[in-house]
Length: 114
Length: 112
View: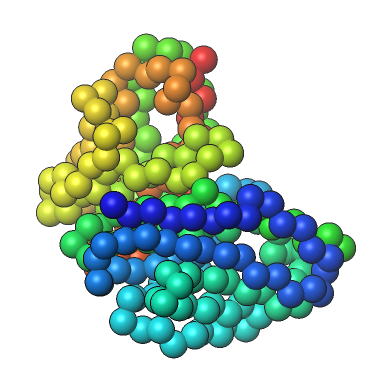
């Protein structure tokens, strides 16, 4: 059975601080995909990144970076120099190979205080 | 940039009424999905659709739900007899491959 745990329900940081959002997953498959989505106050879901289980290379995109560690079944997301516009709910999600649906975690609400 | 569009953005309906939520997926995508998010909760998979048929569905997707691709561009979710607990944000998504979906902006359904 698949499971995605985002233990941090809510995080508040002051603008320009770095923040890391944790994601721990469970799956029996050796081939799977991990995702992060952002849900701003307007409600839409914005795709941020997809990683497959065979690619453990960390990725950086601007102020965003992702750390994928299979040994700990974690796919953590770091925002450096946070900005007010980063305030949103962030969802981690998992898709197992052969299944074409996403299984979401419960989300982490990030509030960046100016 | 291509995007998934959903209409309406907000729908209010009376309990027991039928409702149809509409989506226009990204044009060259082949896989279509509906997800639901009850207020303040996580996003839950409802159904996936490929090659004009349902490829996967969750336990939530019971007989009161149906999906259709009536023409080459639209993808609809019908709820036959709405209940109060159907109140949620409904997201349509599409993808060009088996994984990695792009979501629409959602339709907020309120059942009164």
